[in-house]
Length: 174
Image (tube, rainbow, N blue to C red; front, side, top):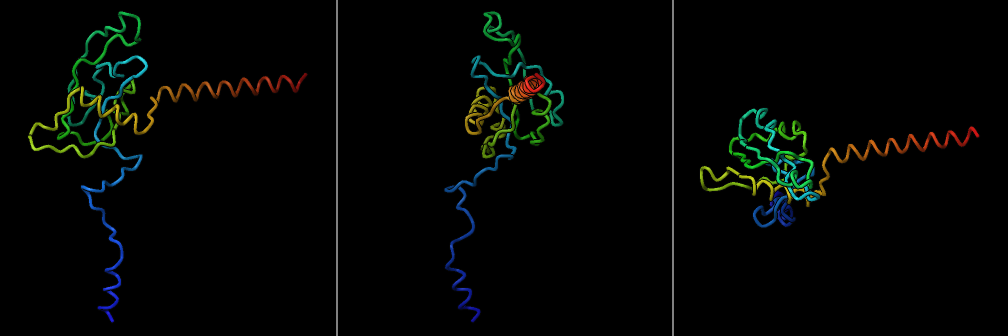
């Protein structure tokens, strides 16, 4: 009887995934490797190279430098400085997210990338162009909107609601 029952249990579909062929979907709150975001309205990265993330990183896995923003001199951008060089050593990163929390410019996000292993020792040192590519992919996949833009829209909606209430209260009094 035991053998017959185990035979029928063996005919069920397998529960496991065939990993390389069928990737496991990533949950929306998953925190993968850090990436830099792109400001499509202006055509430049959000990062200004202020180095707040670098100074507060517990593993010191990032390095960056800044330069004067040529688009600011032309009057097309409000950022006076812009990132010139940025690198993250993913072998040292512990995916804590401190850099994302501290960034004042919405320039760094924890992407959904997690399959970035290489065969070279320094292959996990990711430079600015690759970080921007990962960030652009994350922005497209998640319909990312900068948190400062969301906060501004929320405040404007609250102000509009208060104004509408004041107008409605004024009409009832008349």
